[in-house]
Image 1: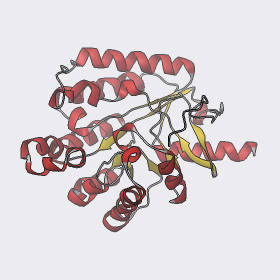
Image 2: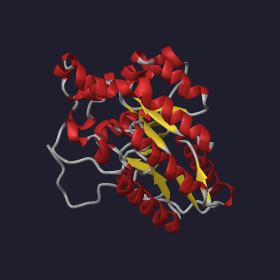
Image 3: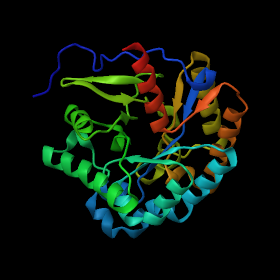
Length: 287
């Protein structure tokens, strides 16, 4: 049964905590590392479609190395939400991400939608990815981003039960907040700005007739969204995919956007775990 009663989907309030170091706004640079799993998870028959899978294979071969190079140039640390399948398939590139001081967080195992999964599948997707992180990389994830940009009440409780400190999936605010679950306080949310989902501009041609957007159009959208969010004192949270942003023309968009952000002296740039640390520290001062 579905609960269709007229009530807000989310009753959590985003507190007006100050940003670190006296900054007036924030940027959360984040990448979804799906690799081939996004295609296989969407349709198991894609396991035999080698050219379709090659879109995801581009990430480890070219996309992520170029992104790491760009982040080093701008001295930016980011979060990479990586599927467990991608960790098992491409351990070397995940190790390179960590070696540069970036964070690796949870993005499911096979990039399956949590809202359409049964309980056993939810648990398997959660625990297999955590196992891959521990077994291959020796880490435990602090954060989570929902595959396909969707989640469910059961999945939110599962995040809490597994000790996931933050989520970066919801689209309903410009400042972090803590989820209120039926069981009590849940993970911190670092809300996403959908305008920064590069999949919408650069790869939809594989599965729909929509044309790709050029550099000028995407950069203009990103700058305008960032500038207004900065004026409002919020966080600009990015949803970038190395099989899109890591392409030759599109890496220039990231490079020029980060240059634009860096010219502003009032922007705090952090990884997801840094946002969680700061939020928890601010909470401790008011509890």
